Length: 269
Length: 200
Image (cartoon, rainbow over the protein chains, first blue to last red):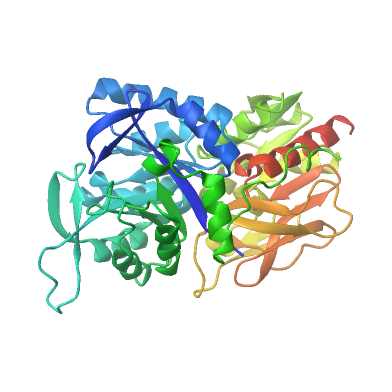
């Protein structure tokens, strides 16, 4: 049986981990290689590294960062941030990413997803969707969300749930679904958004934005998430991955045991 | 210890290379079948499309080199698409023959299950496996082998019913999952394959 993945997310800028609220007011949160290695030991199932560099000079650091993380890491690594062209994806995969997340460029040029999937394989291509609740409900009176791009600065008017379905049809193998309203707020995932997307796609959905307590993670799974992403609570040591997995296991969520195998066992026999 | 890596595409080449290097191996890309024939230990990684990868294997003479390598009972590690390429066929590419080193025919997961099968799942090896052990490993694939191929020891996993997670025969190990991304369990598996390799 497939286990629910716990995914720490590192936002990086100029080769350092940073964290802000709603993509703004970024503060330094440490060295990415050190953080990755710590998460692997603690039992993380995968890492996401999103480059939020504001300038091309800053972005140039990112391949070095990915290479350095890859050297040490025996876990799947998803990279994203500012991915616009096929060449960006190729370079990230070459540097050591296993999956690449595409956000703004996919919304602006949906055919990019088909091209990437064909070239690199569906399971390599993640569509990252930042969804903001619309102030007014949709025509049928139920909640609706629109896709925001360019780090939240641009509201596209595109229906987020329909976009996830289209992105999958075009070749995305996974949806990384961030609630723009909840990101950095500690109020929990937007479970309504998760359930709405879950009902429309067959591929895995990664919940992102707002989780700060065990209840939030459980609610994410109950709403259909296959993987649970968080950033600041892990970086600042408020929640340890191993403790979270233990708590989730106690609540009946199927997780890969954090300590598997125990130190000193499972070696060459 | 030198390992020759057959470049079937770009994805997961870095992960496989770094994973083996962490265990002290020297990984060299082999550019064609002749170069592959000079190497004692071969790795066939692979992410991407079955037919495109088979084309690369045939165009550069890797198909013959891999068959000769297997016949000579030299160590081979095939990962993910690599495992599928060793088989007879895949539903992904009707009409394209695989290398036929095992007789497996790969089919897409059914409609009622998450696809791609992406994440950590547990595997259970049958008794007598030399490399494979039980534990959680990382998968990322949409096509799977339902029936164990004849003449191989297998490990199975479950996603909408059992499927073949890996096969082994002597120094040949082929995994649907990614040992290079499977933490300590994956590392131990790679190490057993490398060490087994050196004694062959």
